[in-house]
Image 1 (cartoon, helix red, strand yellow):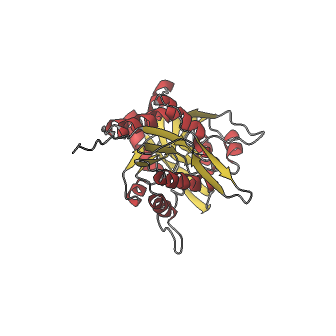
Image 2 (cartoon, rainbow, N blue to C red):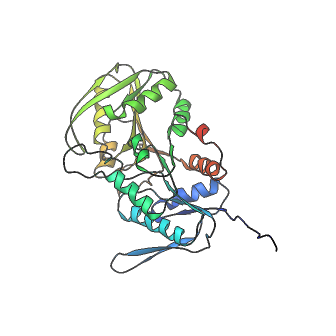
Image 3 (cartoon, one colour):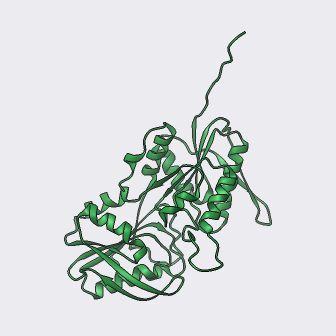
Length: 321
């Protein structure tokens, strides 16, 4: 009797949902691949259905999508994962440069949801085999998943950029206590002092009072955070630091959520520059001033980790901290 001939076809294929198509194309290009072909059929009532336009049977499929608003971005990713599993993909990896709902990582008051855990459950239910993401709002969200999570740090691109600036009298600032751990890591690597801003909130997205702990006068300050939403905290911190005698204030934020009056707040603030990554595409409103905003791509970092995961290589060397 002839021995059965088993062929393993675990080829790699990269796809992107509509919200992250530009980043998906950059990642595929960095890997020397073409972005996989897919499309979305829409119905008149707003319902939509993604479809793969090529065979993915037996392939390792990476689907790139950040889950920023609207909710369609998250649901499109879930549908793409489900479609890939039903099309007999070998493994499905969700590449989520920005993990939405991450701010809902715990019950910080009675009778609220834990949105980050719910999103993790939805991804697992859809059939996701692995998650890749960058600078989670809270590190413990990795534990919400019952699959491997590759947590990438934007420090891989931010630190080299900061070194090219050759800034004298540099200090790193955390805009609030929650960002102090990340800011402290940067200050240790760069060998510069740490400043911590302490704020009180009147309500969500509205900052009350703010003060700074540490030497501010005569320093060139980099404010560090994982995301910038309305930019209320960021710009208030920048203005306060300049009032206290800082020579200049820049800011680094991985995820450019930039909602509400964010562009106006940044343009009218004391910030010299806001450096963000392309985990979320800039959606500049008509007439808005985005001249202070610089974008650094994480495509090569994600491509490197994807290649290592696909080839079962260690990825520990891809992380700065």
